[in-house]
Length: 485
Image (cartoon, rainbow, N blue to C red):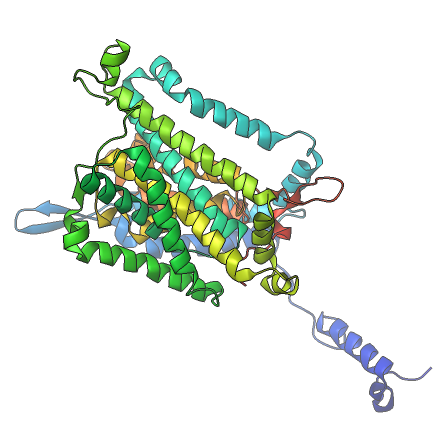
């Protein structure tokens, strides 16, 4: 038998392949090369990961937790509180240790096992049941709150209005990012265009809410097309930078065009929506006077709640219908592969413009509602952080998932408000601990934990809009993230 390691044998194709395999085997620790270093055990690896995480947390939170400044006579007084700092480090170490030991370093992937169990029980429509349950709660929330939480009725109803507003914004952005795969960091610009369009039309021309609402949506859609034209050739990170710049341009224009937008003073006195001309106040001819019921300030909030609920349901209905139409399938094809789209004869220019315009229109509707609810708007309400929150809702819920956007909105917006009143943390960190000062930090850590657990979002399965013979759900890892690539 010929020696495959000889120069003559190595010159032949089969000899070179065998020589390459022998070298690869040798690099794995087989003689005559040195043995590969032994891998750490499961416990050692978990301890290392926990120690590194604890060290990073200790360095990053040193000036947030270990020291505290208070206003004193003649300046500020610096006091040390190492106990809070040490508790935070211990929590970080324990969390990372448990994740590494039970999830990442195990013999079998825990997360993968959950996915297989969920896939095996696919006959039960859990998503539909959860969606119907959430819809029932949304429809009956103004009725349930006075029965179970009468003391917090107004607060929770106002919180529900805010959550539904972000649900609508998330569904609008989901068209651009989740379906079409175009990363948009300036979605708040359309939100602002809708709000200012409604405010200017209502205050200058004395038009009602239901007349200004579609006009504001059309104005926002027009600006969506205007944004879409310059970014037709851009992809990925470049597309994100341009959309981010567009959002900042709109905010700066609103801030500096004092004669038209009011500048930093904003627009005050925006009219509230009426119920077929009936206003919600104590005057004669009002809603309560017409129907012969006792006036209550909560009536206006109930009416606003059902308005934004109807607008959100309209957004969901239109989005789901568009997904089954040729334009919706073109959006998903664009997300998967733009070059393949063009090879099939799809006009990618029109597809991108329709995605931007449709998403912007629903953002304009949400902006109109925000203006009439607040009765005052200013450029400070439309900063980049709003775009970041909306995009985080879409990504956290799962790109392209309607139900995921709802769950993420409830978790994010409701979670931020919950952390305002989470006084139970004072039992851990002491009575001097104020949870409102660290709510964004705590919320950010919770988001990181969720994304480690569910990298593709809370809803990790997708239902294709076009199927052959049998409809089957697919994993989110088989769906392209898009971003214009």
